[in-house]
Every structure is written in structure tokens, then in C-alpha cells.
Image (cartoon, rainbow, N blue to C red; front, side):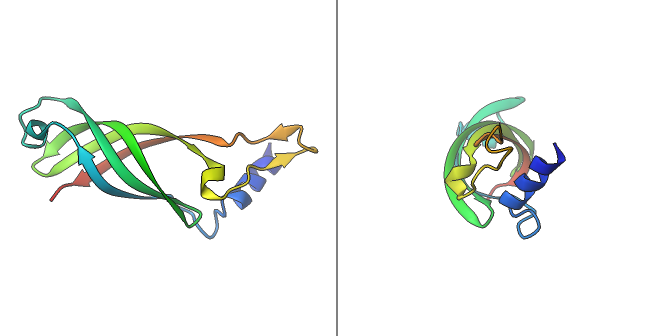
Length: 115
């Protein structure tokens, strides 16, 4: 529905905030994997700041990681977010008969470097 899509763009303030910002704060993983001793993908727990419409929330997430080069890894995963946690009112149309779900499943695939 084009109207509800436009209402969602307005709710997300898409023109003012066209991007979701992610700041990785810390990770917890097997230290051997960061040293290159693990082959392939490994589990990683991360704390990150997510900024949507100028509102920042800290989230702890579980993800998978793969070492690409020394001090460089790929981080993939998903996180369930709620628009209301970021001060966004999910839009609705036709007197509430059509509603956008508050829940957003946020999928990410990041390349990060470590210190």
C-alpha cells in the first residue's frame, strides 16, 4: 500500500535520517578466533549502539563472525527491534484497520576492524 509506505517513511523521518547508525562498543568471543585459530564462522556477542531517527539505544546481540584478515572480520546476524523503543509511532490507516507492526526484524552484515 503506497499510502502506508509513505506514512512509514514519515514516521521514520526518512528524509532527515536516511540511515540507521551502528556503533560497535564491544564484543565477547573466543580469543583464539580473533587470533586466526578458528576456521570459518564462530559465535560472537556484541554490544552496540543503534541510532534510528536520532534516538540511540544500546543493544546486546548474538551474531556470527568470520575472520577476513588480521584485525578484520565480517559480522552477520539479526536483532528484533521495536519502533516504539526509538520514539516512533507505527503508522496506521483506515481508522486503524491497517497497521504497521511495531516489531522490526533488523538484519545486518558488517565488515569491522579491531584494535
